[in-house]
Length: 144
Image (cartoon, rainbow, N blue to C red; front, side, top):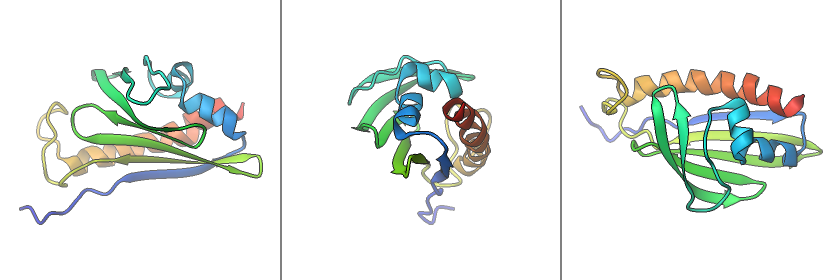
């Protein structure tokens, strides 16, 4: 049942009452990422391979784009996922956009994600997860 449909990217855009430097430090350093997301051994270097300690076990990642303090993107796991953080200075506040892309066909089953979960189902779960991670956990870290 493939009609070349692609599962839509997850996009979360918020404005934080924090400087771009503070938000960048929270999303582009190992300690920062650990404070709101998951333990990791991230290094701010293009091509750096690192591991995020997810609830499902260690997940391999790689920095694929790096433009401090405006853009960071990394591959996440072996499913073709890419997570991008975009930052924009807006009069001393920071517009932050998270994009989780690389979902593939909606009805394809993603290996290693439990029994028979499709890309579309996992995307919906992740979409809800990112909502609270960005709007609650990351906001708390950068605005306090």
